[in-house]
Image (cartoon, rainbow, N blue to C red; front, side, top):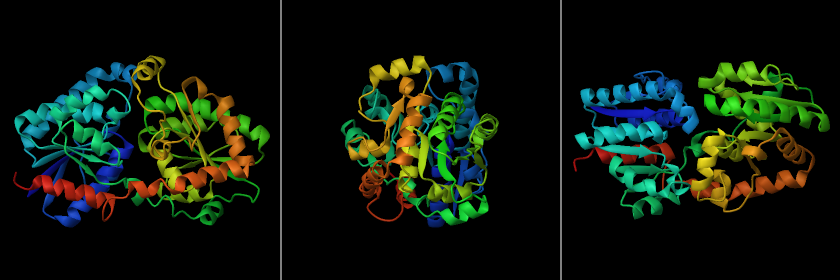
Length: 381
């Protein structure tokens, strides 16, 4: 049996890991898996070394209070790899944890692939030299990442973006409205505050107040909040006090129907904005981090946009309201515009159209392309 060791640290990586397991198992039924993952990987029969939610922190100020626990989990993961002797280690996104594990095991002779290129092209580009020592190959989701890393001597496979496999563009609006008994006048607004404890804690009060302000100008708003496993209880408790009252989605299967029913979205920056764009939902992106983290990032960031849609388009299709601009007043004003000005919503949808062709691999599905890259790594050098 061939053992592939997978390490995912947050919800998006967990989903990538689940699709990768399915694609690898289809190609090579003899492969077994171990490592760290979440609920979606567990659905594929994967047993996690410890609960993945323990790794769902981000930013300097968020990591520091958890440093001792994270260090212990780092030691535990590296020791497990040394004991199990997998044929390849695949770290999936979450470079803060995954690449630290890689730095420990690669010098011991393990082949390491990192799935989802670290965004050092956006900030801290000098770190690419260190990454070159930590991994053997990168599996990149975005087409412009390959030249950047290859210049530093890191082989790259552009495998395409897994968002194309999500089904986000195939929801059923009528089914969603029927299921939740929405009146004809009710207008669905999609609200996605994130999947990390640190980000939802900062965004939930702001998003809630933005919705209240927007509802004063646009009657019959109905927020819909898909819940992410690691922060489900936190989001449920905070959103329970919102007005208008939200619909909380615990069933992942309902999420894409909600996308189809939504007229606009209030979305945190990240992969979720790309998924919502695939569904054709016009949105405003908001994001806040700890002020200390923000001050550091502002000095280091090298790109004009934070939204992947805007980065790919090389222009601002989606409004980005970050840090002090991520205020209830500014978010609600932009949301109201999308709900009341058909031209503003149509301009976003038109901009989405050309972005997704850039995200397709040369052939097959992204998960199949990623699995093929892992299988090549299993071949004798």
